Length: 185
View 1 (cartoon, rainbow, N blue to C red):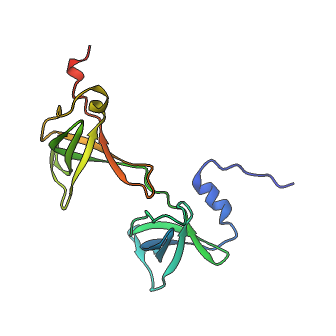
View 2: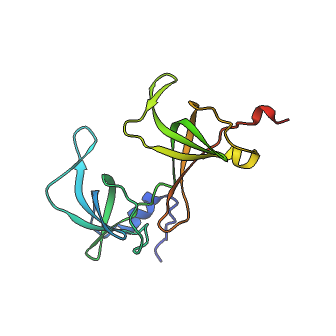
View 3: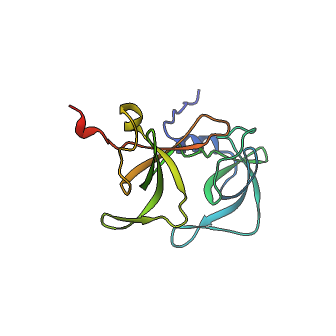
């Protein structure tokens, strides 16, 4: 009886699943519908980056998304596509969370703030990210400790992007600034 290998990493599982199938690197270029996308083959260039090769386009299905929901994969996302019975499939999970620095622009009350994404311009200095929209972010410390408006305008905070459980999911923004920490015993 052949020995069954147990894989604890995604690459090991992919190697097992793709052992007898064709696979290639692709770049997602457009969303078609549901969990279907248009992709183009890519390869590594001499500098170690990736570049689109040829003019061929592929229709790929993202198995990490439901077929009846709007796709969440952003254009220019690179992936490994596997040919399964004549259909190309990828497995790209939406990023569950992303952090970015933001400047508090104004309080909206009740722990809600208008914030704007920042980029680092030097050691300890920041500037507005080009084209960054104003977002509403909630201070987790204030949601559980008291009334809002405790974080000063101009304060730089680290904002976490989280997806809610809506259909389709909507990005929500939170940060945890200990506004009341100096008053706690």
